[in-house]
Amino acid sequence: QVQLVESGGGSVQAGGSLRLSCAVSGVIYLHNCLGWFRLAPGTEREGVAAIYSNRGTTYYADSVKGRFTISQDNAVLTFYLEMNTLKPEDSATYFCAAGPLLAAGSGNYCNLNDSAYETWGRGTKVTVSS
Image 1 (cartoon, rainbow, N blue to C red):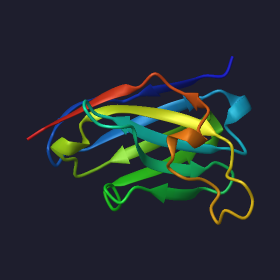
Image 2: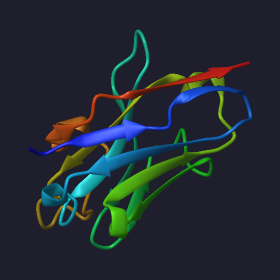
Image 3: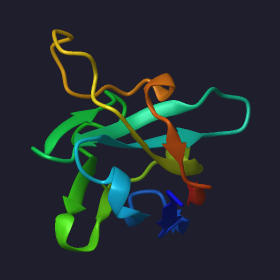
Image 4: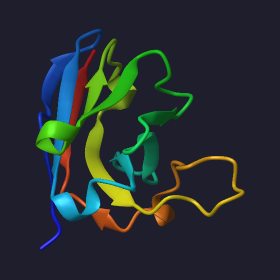
């Protein structure tokens, strides 16, 4: 059974850091886009960061550029979201997801649209206090 399992959420003060992990079953780790999304109460799900697993090509939302880093460890089939300089507005439930590459000719391997991702984890909550 295909699974993605997040871990690493918690509570932190503004300016602090957290690292989220997403363990992925092998069948979907390679040749796919791996992404992080977040959902805060009263908002729509937002794409935060993505990585093309084969090449390590990364994509970020403007709201997190320079603060968040997505990375992967192919040896343990896990990808990560390192979150630094956290702000209260980063508080949300964070989900990891996997999906196929974008169609050839699109200009990118991956994007941050949740409709492009097919398999989702259950989420991990991040709370940033001011």
